[in-house]
Length: 426
Ligand code: S3P
Image: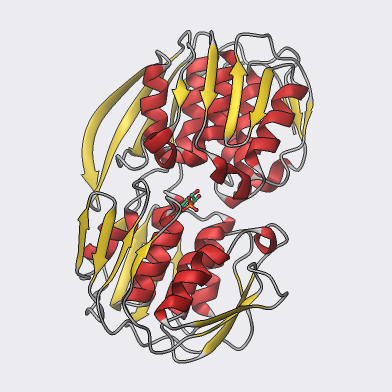
């Protein structure tokens, strides 16, 4: 895919449904009693992997014109799948599903694509083993494929070494099947969609600071869920609207949960012109429209507790920093190395190829912004977020850029290039 520089951006768009919330709507719907009806569900490859895993465990899921209906069978209604469950590229499916599988009275093998088979699963194997599940990597490591022999679980108090909503959610979901309460404490608060949505399904959760406790064996009941637009997908349009000259775009219906809005806080520190309009709530999540206007950005520091609130937006924030005045430092973000690609490497290599002054560090990067970027051929390392971040960089680079394997965006945003092109003033 070749992207040319844009002279201006104008118009409005609605980004697809939130990926984290879409996954959870299917998972919780499957183990609730009765129907869960989901609108504005993200039909990206990752969430479709979640649907197919649950269909393979006997859950009927209908998809009619973007409306997903999950016929839940209750906490104990899943059936042993006939074959290994394939999560594709989806870390969220792998880790959250493992928590549910640990509570089942049958054994399951979970596998995924080449990227998933390299991502660390020890972070969920450890607490699940502590709870009493037998989890074994089939290649002698702590990666997929692995087998989970579920069964009678005990409640634990888990002190997670990483601020990860996937780890937290995995342990909480296993806690539904335990014989006593389970709590998780993390070093900084990660996204809390599991806590919010499980509570609305009828689970008993109590959150305090960075800890959450769940009571076992609730009666979960199906819900109607309207999924807010994904702020992680909106992030590319926020950046494009800020960086392209003469731009003004309205992004409608974006989720602004405070555990996810780090991009807005970082952008504000960079002197971005972003207005929040029409703030309201959708299915228990805060939502608004974002009006984004071209801005002269300045550098910032992105670190500490802010990191979990913008972890998936660091590729596009790095692009913004390359165009900003001054030196941006990103640290405390070693988690970037274990995402769909090693994102420290994939960001730094590709920004350097475009002429940016950027250096990788152990837990982030340092970007001396303000150089003119130029044409390069971008290798996104099959990582959807790298492809989209560099599509935006291309709009502002001399000669644009070519994105290899551009179709990898289907993981979270199948219509990304169509939506981007629709805003470019020709
Ligand atoms: C997610 C949590 C984050 C995020 C991922 C989705 C989730 O991962 O990067 O894209 O839906 O819980 P970690 O929990 O591993 O940080």
